Image (cartoon, rainbow, N blue to C red; front, side, top):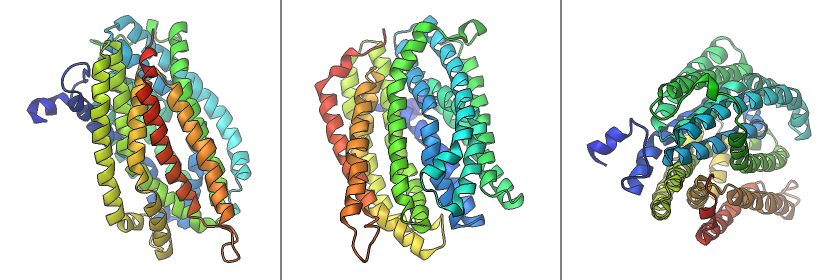
Length: 461
């Protein structure tokens, strides 16, 4: 990359000039580190409760995950919509529209935070009961989720404001602030759980406080970017046209997240039927999966910003060239991760638990799904291009098809078909086989619709 490339890591990236692959890598590297740091929030929670409280507490934190994801979909939508608008207005060099888009996003986030805080705090316990959460962990799940939802504004503003920073081409700032917050989260986790003996509630409180710090740091950084846009009071209000665009661009991503989370909830109910040991194994696998997915998600977000800036500048040939190069890099990275998981997976599982049976069970499940990360690399990068160009509908319905029509029916169908006197509940490995199949089909469908090129007609007006 050279010294010039390294220097560019520390300034907002203009992705409409230079070599596409270099722009994508320079933008992705700090964001990948940041995403890994964010994943540390949940992972440290799991490690701390698994080691200091026990396997049931580990299962409680994991069982809370799908509900948490379902109830923060509003923020996912606002973040995606804001990031796409910001990147396209930056590419078009439209300072006024950029200022209005940022201000509108800040107001919408506040409204969404209030709605989630009120609704989710009340709905948590009934949802957990609906999912047949075991009695042994339901109280822990409830207290964990309620504390996170009361402090949801920190999580919301970090996600939206860091999304805006990335849309502006500044992925390094979000990284630095998240590293600070991750370090704080680890210290608070150990203090609240190991010293104060607060258990699962302590883990939730640590996460909420750390996310609030990262949100404040992002807001401070945005206020300093006066050469790109104005963060003044007159712009911090809901502008009608920008609200419509954020909702138009963001709702499909929010709906996608909601549907994926609902499918996870449906599958979680099936997972719960196999008992606490399998729930705990699934938590461990999903934590490792979270890290394994990070490069894919990072490349996907990078491609959204890359496509957004270049579509805003009218550089469609450059978008196509970058899509090819970005996908190749993402697939190569995923292949390396698959090898690392297969070779060092057992050691990764042992970070979370000392129970030999749990380590073996987790590793067996991980082996089934590992190769699917290569397929997800294709899906994420090409979906990122389509979203950046303003076509958020196509990735939405592809996700719906793979989750609702493929993953869930396959999981339940295969489990049912494998029921025997020895396995009265069915073969639990089928949950992971169904996931692998849905990932592969998702990549094929995404490739077909990217190739048709209709996403080129969806730019923000």
